[in-house]
Structures are given as structure tokens and as C-alpha cells.
Image 1 (tube, rainbow, N blue to C red):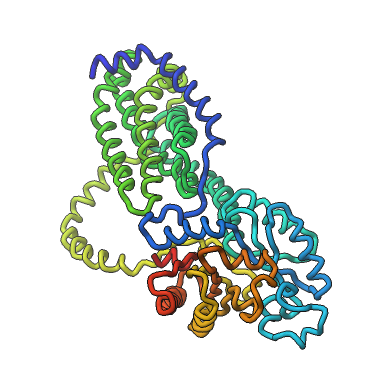
Image 2 (image 1 turned 45 degrees about the vertical axis):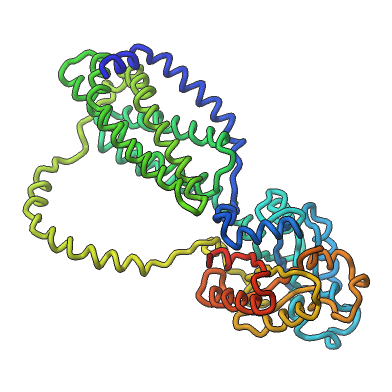
Length: 501
């Protein structure tokens, strides 16, 4: 270790230049990192919903969808607004009341339930289908343009709107978190050091490794938005003590009167085992995440393990170069230790050792209590509840795909699904067009929305939250009903089924 420590100190300028070069490359790579906001893509491939998503993409394409509501509207204004929606770049199709009934007639002559699905209390509700998927940047841009339409108050909800809000939240909130956490980190470092410059060097060394980690994620291929927004802060939190180990040892050597370079060599020799042991156990812990069946574990484990390894290299190779370069500034900015003497506290802790058995008795209680924690697995927690629920009720769609070819069975299934608790509406080709009408007479864009060569698609609208006992019960009932009409032949896609799985 002595020879390695000497090599690191002697070649410090080389390592400093190398890190700056890699940092510059990483900064250029950072914008190229592809971020995935669709957590269903991490579901194991052998799960039923993963297979269903693949089939739907092949048969119908994964087009995003959202609902748009406008206030203080009437039929002519609603038709004008629909025309504006259809001309928004990224919008593929807009469905409204006029697609299912003649709106030139008095509304009293049209089925009331149908009218209130799209027009109620002066509010118009449009179903928007996009060119690309819910999580596409093009779809997000279309949603932003819809929000900017100057037609009074506009509300949006649905999978595409949720994905857009999630992306906005992830981008903005991470900056808020950084602004809140960095001062806390600085305070900890100031309390742990005896120089005003040392915390800056700590942050510089670990910060460089974080930026390199973020940039090299471009080489990974694609990472989740959760990893993108949390990896840097987690990396900083779990590796900041490496720098403290090295600098404390360096300070002890300097206090003995050892020359700067020799002090750093000794510090590297004596702190290497502690730093490497700490980092390797952390890397092993994060690497264990990579063996999760849920693919986001591999995603987070790989990025975090890579980040800790880079922090280790940064502390051992970059920090010595920075400390030696700024050693005079460190000495000039020396201050008295702020950390209080903990001897009295240690004596108190020693006296209280008798309570340890009582604490041990609480462990089984804590273990049992943790089973009562309530977790939210989807994006509902970050999706604001809007005025749309007050007018049109909740919107929780799921897709059911069944083999095409039997209008009678599809009609019977649609009717049975509509009678289930928690089901608000069922939209299928057999419900939007009378079964006696020849399929050739129905507009092709409507047919394509509900039917492919092999499958018929039914959209089941649930009047429940996405992550609730009621939604999971409804999903179970829908599966049982679909299996009764199409044993082992149906496929289901949706937020509630995904969370349930």
C-alpha cells in the first residue's frame, strides 16, 4: 500500500487532469441520458400485464390518452374547441358527443347517459388520443400546447396527463431537494472539520464523482426517472464520510509535524482499509438490488453501485491532489473545532446500557408494526385531484383485449362488465355502434380504435381510485367475468392492474 500511496501523491497532477477530462466528457454526455417515466416497463417479462402491453403495442400501438374538460361551454363552443384540439401537433384523434350522436338535435332527444358522459352542467369533456405513447416527449409537448389554448379554464387528466405532470414534478422537485439538502450537508461537514476550505474540497471531490456518474449513465442505455432524480443525493449521502476519514487522518499526520506530501501518503495508507471496506459493503448492498425481479432494482442498483465506486476513486485519487494543491489555503482558514466534547454524553450512554434489553423487546413489535405501512406504487400520489371529478366522476381506465370475431360474446361481456361494482362505463365497438349496423358502415378510425385483425379492445372505466381496495376488487371481478366469456384468452392493461400485480 505504501508504493500505491506514493504513486498517487507523486502522480497527483496526472490524476487531477484525468478527472477533469472525464468530467468534461461526462458533462457533454449528461444531456444524452435517456430517462424512462413508464414504470410498467420494469415489470418482469413473464407477468401477464407485460405480455398484454406487448400484444397491445403490436395490435393497436401504444397511443397515449387523456381527458380534457372545458368550463362554461355550449355545443357550438365545444365543437369549435374540438376542432382546435384536433389541430394540436401530436394529437391523433379527439372523441366527443358528436361522434356518437347528432348534436344538431335537442339534447333532450339523445340518450341522457350518453350526453352526460361528454357534456354536463355546462362542462364539455373530450377524449384525446395522441400519436405516441403516454410517456412520449411528443405527447408531453401536445399536452402543454393544450393547456395553453385560450379557451377559458382547461383541465386535463388521464395516463398521458399524469405522465406529463410526473415529468414536470421530477424535474422541478429535485432542484428544491438539492437546495434544501446541500446546506445540511455543508453544516455536517463544517462541524466535522477544522477548516473552512475542507468542506468545499469534500463537495468538489464527491461532486465530480456524481457528475461523472450522471454522465456515464448515457452508456447504460436508459434509466428510470426515480434513479435520475435520487441517485446523486443518495451517492453524496452514503459516500461523504470517505472524505472525512481521509482528511481527519491527514490532519493528524500534519499535527505531528509531518511534511504535506508525506502526511498524505501516511493518511492514504492508514485510511485505505476503512474507506475501501465501507465502500465495498455499500457497493455490495446496491448490487443486491440488481437481482430484484422488478427491473427498477437493476436500474437503481447499477447506477448507485457505479456511483459509490466512482466516489471511492475520487476520494483516493482526486481528493489528495486537491488537498495538496490547496494545503496553504486550508491552513489559513483553520478554525477551532465546532463539534462538542462527547465524553459526558458517552458516560450517560454507558449508564443507560441497562435499558438495552427493553429495547430488544420492542424489536418484535416494530417488526410486526412495519407490516401496517401503506405504500403507493403508482403515480396517483403526485397527481392532483381536479374539478373534473366533481363534474364527471373519477377516471381510472383499463383496457381489456379479447379475441375478435364474436359480436354476441363481446356484447354479453360488455353488458356483464357494466353491471360490476366499481365499473362506471364500458366502451367497445359493440357499445358505440349498434351490433346490427354492418362494420363497413362505421367510420374506419372508430373501428381501428376498438378492433384489430386478432383482437377486440374494450375500455373499462372504473369509478375508483387507482390504488385502493375498491379498485383491486374491481380488477378481480373484471378478470373473473372476462375469464367466464373468454377462458384464458383475455389480456388486461391499466394502472390498477399493474399496481395490483
